[in-house]
Amino acid sequence: MMNNTYKLILKPGKMTLKYKFFALAAILIFTIPAMAQDYNWQEITEEYDLQEGVKAFKETTLNAWYLEVDLNIQEIIVHPYIGPSQNLLPFAQSVGAIASINGGFFSGSTSLSSVIYPEEVMARNVQTLSRPSGTYYVTRGFFGLREDRSPMVEWVYHFSNLLEDFYRFDRPIPNTQTTPAPPPVKADGEVIGDVIVGIGGAPVLVKNGQIDITYDEEVIWGGIGGFEETRARTAVGYTQDNRVILFVNNETPGLGFQKLAEIMLDLGSYEALNLDGGGSTHMTIGDQLVNKTLHSRQVPTILAIVPADSLKLPVKQSEIILDTEFDNVALTGSGWFETANAGFYGDSRSMLAPVGDGNLYATYSPDLVGNEEYEVYAWWVASFNRATDTPVVVRHRDGIDTVSVNQAGNGSMWNLIGTYTFAGTSDDQVIISNAATTGQYVVADGVRFVGPEKTGTSVLRESMEIPASVVLHQNYPNPFNPVTNIRFQLPENQNIRLEVFDALGRSVQILTEGKLPEGSHTYQFDASALSSGLYIYTLTAGSERTSRTMMLIK
Image 1 (tube, rainbow, N blue to C red):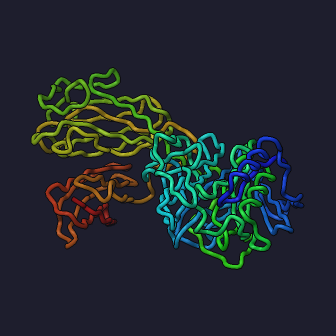
Image 2: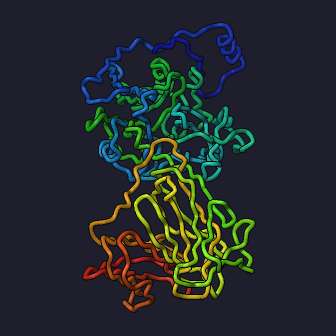
């Protein structure tokens, strides 16, 4: 992959009108031949246990190495990582990297370069820099992957820590060594809406198939060395056929920015970006450190080649809401009536039923995707005469769960009942029963199912099978204010007692007591009348006694 046409680059600094004229003439009239000498790159892939799609090369004269990653191979991906500063090899090993290079700029353990994870800004490029001529805003370089796995190199700016304020620009703002440019504005750029992962650096070296070193604009001068300074370098680029190039060279003989850009172009880069260099510059392949620099530095960011399932794409959510007037919601029994209270979901009023023995119940029959996990929520209109232990029965793939909810509070909002894996059949149901023991009425209103639209790499879910022993789960949410859910699982029918204590060991509330069937059970704990602090909840089942802590923050 050789490219022998280069864009003429003029060194930073002052230039007379006469020389500007001749430079412009040269650009317009001549095609500049490749200035880089022919290097002897030797493939060393067979020296390592590399999987399909990853190749390694070495050049002895340059004392340089590069990795070529074929993103057309779906089993691998290039992924940045951020964490506590450490040497590259243990960092790479901790994330299961096939191979890696160091990442962007930093100070101590703080990244000064962007790090983007799926739908999350982990770190931002530096926003401003101080130089003798003033304070400079900077639109710096960024290498990333889009949702379709295609790479990009862009000039970017973060207007906040939110991904929707992460903008790209056709050109960096026009800083010079004597005059700061005005701050970037959103109107001059656009949101990078399809980025899934990426890492920042500076300066951009190659853009649109031409050398385009934006050294002045990105305010590299006055910081990490001069334009022509030769040193150890790290760079990343990509080809037009979706191959990523990860490059490092040692400090002897070292490279300046111009030569580095020429080499990245010569290796086939359509676009390329400089990363942190000097003592940070390292490459790993497997469990081996490929190169050694004179001053090895610990780094907080790396760019790694990892198995594709290491990319944890957020699962896009879809929701299904069933209300009492829908055809797939049935009210059984003749005692149901509409509430006069406001705050009901949708167009139909909440339905009430007198507390009884389970003879009145509302059945919700959703059409769900089989073997997928859904969060189940319920809506009700709260009032002083509502049951505080209304049974909500969830029939799912792995059994039947009964959750008791307090309908005297938390009204006119979606209340989480629990998370379940459903079968995708007519057996999937949520039933609200009048078999409560407190209050006068139970409420049936909207029920909401929030589940995934499968995109990207799927994530295995925890099984909800009947356990071999009693299991008391951590409450959720935690910390909480003022309501939380406590879930436990029983291996068989057992007499149990679920009780909450304060930090001094005094009993606060018995949530439930009596014989319960095998399977999963969830109870709500309402701490509205309690003060902030640490609380302990204890499950006694037969001779077993298990406790966990939870934190109330008001």
